[in-house]
Amino acid sequence: MAAVAQKTLQNTSEQPALRASPVAGPWQPSALQIFPEPVSLPTQRPAKPFVKWVGGKRKLVPNLLRLIPKQFGNYFEPFVGGGALFYAILPQRAFLSDANERLVRAYRGVRDNVEGVIQRLRGYPNDPEFFRQMRKENIDAACDADVAAWLIYLNKTGFNGLYRVNRKNEFNVPFGDQENPAICDCANLRACSQVLKLATIEHDDFTSVLQKAAKGDLVYFDPPYIPLSVSSSFVGYTKVGFDLDDHRRLRDTALALKQRGVHVIISNSAHPFVRDLYEESFSIEDVLAPRAINCCGDRRGPVKELVIH
Image (cartoon, rainbow, N blue to C red):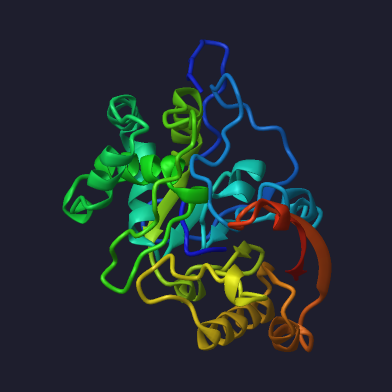
């Protein structure tokens, strides 16, 4: 993952209602949901991630889908990032969370006030001076729709789509100087808003899933990756970062869930430390995933990653 960040809807009388709503309260047991099963949603096109999240899983989704059980209860994604797997499987009951509070608020803004987000983005130019002004905004004091528009704008117009902050939580990615970035994809934002209404969205540490997930549930962990090199390190997507001790805590959390009967899937870099962490208690698969985040275009291409289950 990285130090980074992240259609038109039409109801008809023939369209079925959404299959489920978020459960009341933080968690409650539920009947199994079936996968794969077609989901009929009142959208003209499928939703896809509304931010370009470094380390996003759009290209890795086919490898992940092979590991999705036919039946599972609630779906948990504690490092939601761009949410590519969530959009691919559209679980009936989803709990999406992240340690990046601005990202979580962006998800809530898109879910709860998508027209407000669109209205704001339509007025944002692809301009370096405006970008610098937006970068300095005291965005944490704003409403969720403001946060969503702010994060989407900086993600679409910043260098390589990065989301990176310093220890003061100040966004510090330079302007990307793209010719015509898709700042406001109205149709996709509306599609995302519709499917996110199926989800409970929380700002939380990944360990909170231990208090929520039960036997038969599905948890997908996509943490900030352990870098294979100094230049590939993009783990500053929160001001506190994510270090080796955090990866050990993640392994312990995943193992506790697995021993409880929870379906667990984890993705990470193909670093020897990651193999050592998981090889005793988990199955590990090597996969190739395209990666487009590198300052040198000729160094972008498939890299080996691990899918752990």
